[in-house]
Length: 244
Image (cartoon, rainbow, N blue to C red; front, side, top):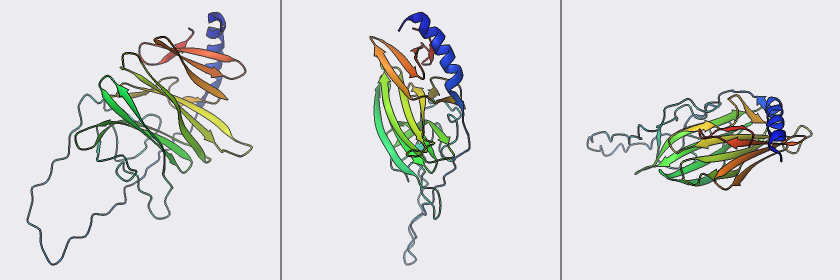
């Protein structure tokens, strides 16, 4: 694709495909109860165990688009990667939460875990750093829709120096119905923070048939297909810009 057409097409495409989406907050409470204490034997008093601390280098920023778990945000510590350990527990007659995917990124500053969950009419992502006794939350992303959602990690890319990773998330709203609609979200992370790599929340979901990551040497491009394909180039700040 020629560079001139890419710049014109990209600007036209971006103006039409960034969607204003619902930013309703998904609040899921942990309903786990502590085990009952024995009434026949009283345990000796013990000093409280301090909670593990997460690195201050993790940026304490707002969740991306919408809040995923009210009690879990940047620098929060979680003991494991199961749904209850991450703060998800389905209460009686509450919304269903199920695991969508788990993946690991190998970055220069250490591995990063990705946990995707599908909610009742929504989806979410948790970005976490492994620690000594668990995981520290880097940040979360979530969205809330009016219909059922299918949700996957379509692809990911890590820069040659290992400093940055780009994630391409795919959502299908109202799958299998006449109203079926594919949506795409592009996120970035350096292992210490996470951000939306194309668009500005809440106008960052791409309502187009196809989006793909296109590595070329050390450079990464994003191809967005509507009536024609528009190409965006990954900038030094980890966000895509128009043109080659």
